[in-house]
Amino acid sequence: MGILENAKEVLRLEANELLRHAELIGGEIERAVNLILECKGKLIVTGVGKSGHIGAKIAATLASTGTPSFFMHPTEALHGDLGMVGKDDLVLAISFSGESEELVRILPHIKRFGVKIIAMASNKNSSLGRICDEFISLKIEREACPLGAAPTVSTTLTLALGDALAVCLMSERKFQKEDFANFHPGGSLGKRLYLKVADVMRTNDLPIVSESVSLKEAINAMTHGKLGTVLLTNANGKLTAILSDGDLRRALMSENFSLEESAIKFATKEPKTIENSQILASKALEMIENFKIQLLAVTDENGTPIGTVHIHDLKNIGL
Image 1 (cartoon, rainbow, N blue to C red):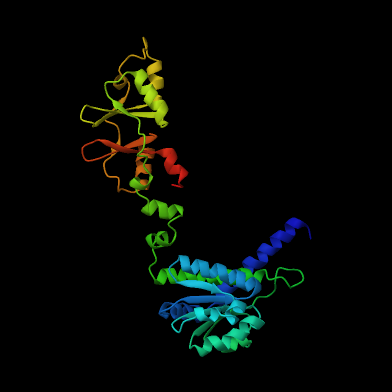
Image 2: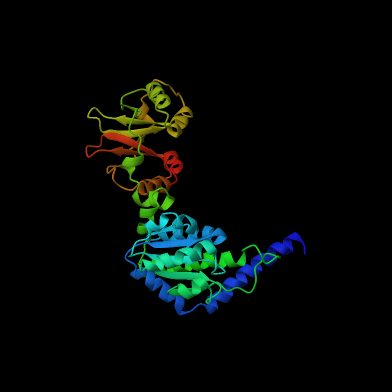
């Protein structure tokens, strides 16, 4: 079998096993979800080897989608980490064979605390299968590994079942995107939902000049401001116009151009502004994109400029 066909066969085997279990799965998944929903403590995921790696991912997914969860390695549990397990907790134990030595050794101690166990294993009559309170089957037809040794299909199935638990729990908890953002403040969704204009606007060394200055003076302020824009204000400090580098290029094309001409002659009057720095930065980005501009001035209630929001700044932070 060639490389390409070999790769396709692996994907077929794993996909087919997922589809097969989509038909086989029954009330056990509902009972497992209900056990987790009833849990007053944390869901502790445990497993050894490849099952442990998959378990760590499942725990991370659960924790980020509204189910307090963490991964505990069975070996570390035998040497003190069992102290992490509280009487109100619940354990999700993963072992394809159901006989992983390190895992099996901690099961009686977990039960001694009165903690319930949800098992994921291939054999209901295994040590793990016999001691658990709810059993989710990992029984597969065969691994994709030609030796039948390396966990492949089985780990994919385990991961998918973990995702199924997480999604079912999200649905039952009415978990919304705002909740997701709470746990992912550094992600793009978190930034969109919580980052405010005040958090991202530039406030230092703003290129602000009087509306009476010449183009030459405005260009000097634009150069030092490094925004490609100059904010023009009246005698009371109120923003009256914005001169952009685009405005400047258009000025250069006019007849009888002179650097001594008034900058406001070529500036954009009544520019787009934000008067509330507490609005979402994502809203500012929408305004910038809708109006096809690069910069929004942020003003106070008197119209005095207090900051700027530039499209490059918003994109650089992941919005």
